[in-house]
Length: 393
Image (cartoon, rainbow, N blue to C red):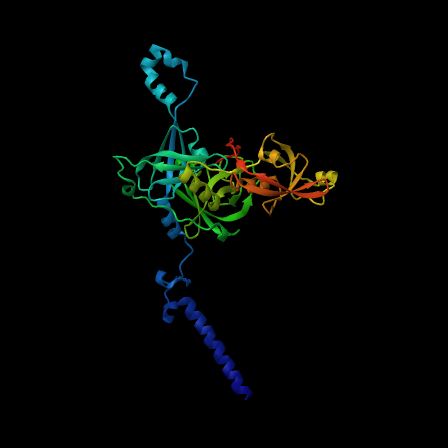
């Protein structure tokens, strides 16, 4: 038995040695070509799972995003050499043209087939003429249908004339509106616009945060934050979900260089839709107002005033003759709730009051000293004020 085992072992060893020598010196004897390296090849395209791509979403949205070009005639600072006849003889016409027109650019979103375009107010602010360039190459004149500086939104209406035909002849592709309640932190988003005027571009990122406020950009703030690249010229363009539905209007960036650093802000579609509908119906936006100046309650203030927490808004001033004055609200009161909705801070108070309808009487819950009381206030109409200025994209 031992002898048979030794013969078997010797036979296997000799066989492996022969196989090694043949495989090294004459691999073709084994059916392999010399110098060929075995690699793992991917299966044919039809047999592979589809790679992640947002082509369909981008293809759906691109026709709905436009470039907006504005021109503005200077109101002052006419060049003194324009009045010199000798200088004008050589350079005047060119310099006169440069002095008369200054151009700006941004982006916008087609929201209806009859020519309404949603964009940022700062894109068309002070513009004398507005031109909209479609993705198919057409350039159409537009007029400002209305604007809301406090939310930094504006609505344009593409002009239907003899050259363009009737509104139905414009062949526009309106965007699909998404639902803000479906947007979550971490969702993939696409930003579409005209950065730096290079042409329509699509960038991809995620929703970094929701409900960003206290940025000093607009009076009313509730921004979507995203890391999708947003640059100058993207203002007024679309922020969409992965299916190509509008969830925001790209508005501003945080930047130390003027370019994208991965922190961009978009006005949520819920706010944009509400403002847009009011502008289309009435030409403007109506908000509630009571005439108070509010201050945030810090832990130090809460301790000094003997307050149990920092919730609410401290009334620092009341406009004489305002709805708040008529309703009995006084400086030093702490506003706790508006129409049954709790007030967390001055920005929350502003949003709650702005959402109220002028003319209706609403209960305000206040803390005065250590007493909780209700004050019925007849809501007034908020006067339009200039928007705050932050870094725009």
